[in-house]
Every structure is written in C-alpha cells, then in structure tokens.
Image (cartoon, rainbow, N blue to C red; front, side, top):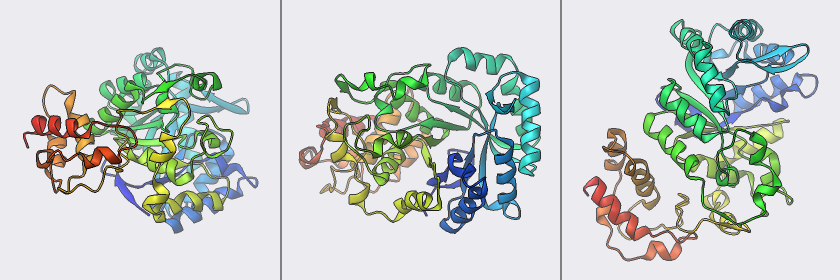
Length: 381
C-alpha cells in the first residue's frame, strides 16, 4: 500500500480508501469482510456517508478492537428518518443524528467529521447561518471529531468553503469526465449524456483552481466517484473510451491536493482490485493515451501531469515543476510551502536548455519550454 499525508491534518492515509456502498451486501455481513480485507491490504481510510442505522451498527462491530487501525470519515447532517436517508441542516436534527451515529459506531471520536453533501451556495450559507458549521467546530474543540470536512460536487461552493469555513478535508468527485464540466448545483448534470455530445475543451478552470487552492491551503482531498459510478470502466460510458481501474485511480491521485481515492467495493474481490493499483506498473497506470483518444474532447495545451514528457536530459521532473508553477502563478506572493517543495526538486526550471524533447513526447501539445521559462522567472531559478 502507498500512503500520503492528508493535507495539514497530520494524518497519514492509504491512497486507496474504502467507501461504504457495498457494506450492506449479505445482510450487512459484507461489512466485517471488507474491514478484514482492508486491514490485510493496509487500507486505513474509510468513508461512511450512509445513515442506515443497521449499517452504522455493523461498522461499529467491525471496528471493535481495532478502532485505532482505521481513519474514519463519517458525515454530519446525514440522518435516518422514517426508514430512509435524509440530508438535513436543521440543527437539533443534526445533533441528534450525530449522537445516534456515535452510539451505533460505539466510538468516542470521528477522525473526519464530514459536513454532508453541499452543492449549492445557498446551502453553504445555511450551514454557516444555522449553526451547523459552529456545531462541527464545537465537536472538534471537544475532541469528538478530530478534523472538519465537507463533501461537495460543486467546485465553486467547495472553494468558498475551504477558504472561509475552516474546512480541513474536502470530499470531492474527481475523474477526467466530470473535470470537463462547469460548476452546477444539480449533481446529475455531471453524468448527463447531453453534456458530452458536443466538443469539450480542457479541464474546467474552476475545478483546476479548486484543486490548486486545496494544495496551497493544506486541505486534503478525498476522492469520490473516481470511476463515475462504473461508467468510465465500461464500453458504453460517457467518455466513449473505456478506462481501467488503475488509470482512473492514477488520474485522481495526480490532481493537486488529492490524498486518497475512496473505492466503492461490493465484494472483497473488488476492494482487492482497487488496492492492486499499488502494484501496477507505470504502463498500467498511464492514462494519457486514453485521455488523448476521448472523442469530442481536446486537452490541447493542458498539462495533465502524466509525465509523458520524461525523461529530461537535465533530470528535470517537468510534471512536478509545472504543478508547482500552476500552484504559485495566481498568487500575489509565492506561497512558502510551494517554494519549499520546488526547492527540494533535484533539478529546476532554470536548468532547462530548451531542447524541446519533452514537447515531442507530450500527448496534449503543452508548450513545455514556455512553462519552464515562466517557472524559472517566477521561482528565480
């Protein structure tokens, strides 16, 4: 298993995490099987967005005696009423739901208290004004949650929350198709067929800015919908070109700020398949050729951090230099953390001799030499 730091939380997380979609299988017996498999694989990060009391109780049983082996991301504002799931911002209901969750999970703390599913600006304002955000901060101060998170599919709402709300962890939908779509308060627009019938060009700038903002601010991103509900893996999926599990995971993990991909698993075999990413070869992880073949989609000029530009005769890690350049260029002053990470590279943009070998290998027509010159000016070497 590979591990990363989750933003500035101090948590070290497995790059493959576990969603809860399949835990209800076999009358909830799958919960324990998946936790056993996760422990054996080194998967230590688990998301529990579902409010089903039977599922939460099953997770509590699965955690018994090994709570410290798992980092649990569980949701605030996801409750169970009248036999079904409900998202709520009513503060008394939110509080009662949290207390019920803690009882069912049989734990005295949640590692990441995730404010549940905020895709509209008006909803974020309600979270702030109704006291839900303050309640999360109170829970953190009391040690009942260790860190505050927010789940969203809307990059504009998410960016506002991470800038304003003390959010330390963002759960966000990341894959190469959703990244093409502009911000929308209707999540179903992300996978609507009509939005993929015309010509699409490059990543949505609001999404790119969100990822870069999270990286700069130290907000760790946990990824949902890396496979677009499985559509990216099938022959009739929205991209028009099937991707593999390894390619989808590699793409998500290459985005700035991303620490862990939450892989939904309906069986131990499915979890094993996602975790096998850590043993995959560079060729198996390579998503560039598949993305370049997407019909009606052009990424011309967009660096996808795929490293097809390597090897550089000057030993420059072009993808990393470009990523740090992107992180820094929109700022009025160079962020110290970005400067430190850039300085730690073995070679820098100023070492570029403008040979152009990288540009000949880039599947997306990126003006690498221009980027290296601009980065050298920005960083000073």
